[in-house]
Image (tube, rainbow, N blue to C red; front, side, top):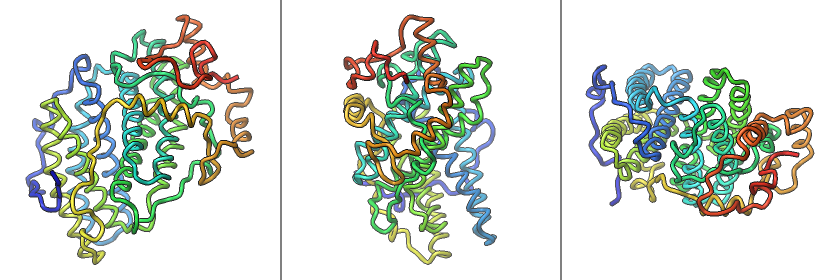
Length: 409
């Protein structure tokens, strides 16, 4: 059924503040939680963080007191929303276990968005990034067994396969080759805008997470891997944020942020089976509907635009879903492993600056890259790599076990 948040009644803004007992959510049990419930929690934390950071930037770029006050109120509520969502993650879930959840989000969210994306250039961009996050999951899964002696299947189940993607050591490209062409705000499909905004938020969350927790490990091999993959996450944020049209006004961006939150909470509410998470999605959807109304009022007053000029008549279809994407990922692996970028373009012939940048980053050779060392160490200590290959051998011969598995020469 079509759902238009502009026509729905939300929770009045002055009724949205929660006291400490209301914010004291019960964390999920890491041994019992559905992996995709964890993924939805991680995703919505990233969405709330992005909305908060955007609101702070808007606050720094306007001196209209009414706008500042409205932003401050909505931002305070979204801080509470972020706390309620992120505090669902239990304290006994280790940093590496949370990391495996982050990378499962990166794989299955990006794959689903790519599958659903109507714009060919945006779809290609998502497929390109997908193969890199897929490899990150593989590297962290091997690190997890090395450091904690446990298998990633306990966290991600067999919903997402674990095997090499585009090898992380090969992902380091010159900064200019992470910039993408942006969509046109006047002609872009509304679904495409929401997809791009969602991936910006998700990848930014991962980048920030690794920036802050990567140095918390004692083990040098872990510190090094977080450092390397953290650098790739910066590339990914650059890639996805480049897709957004910079000509959108501050007020248009505000409306789109609130609209995207409505879209995602509504999407996850339809899919969620966990009663506590479902109640949270329902509550936050009611809050976001009102926050969207306030954003639309500000845009009418200060931009002179009606929301109907920039928003669809109802939430776009399909709703975002977390589900296995194994066949899709395998098809992209088979066809695009060697793909690279040359400024705004996707190419199979790497530009000279790619090789120069690789030399600058890796120095004596890619074998010294932390992502390579993790796999070599796993093989040396445990006799083989850690993989979950439920659908058969790797679709790319170069990455099959026993053929260096993508490890750099």
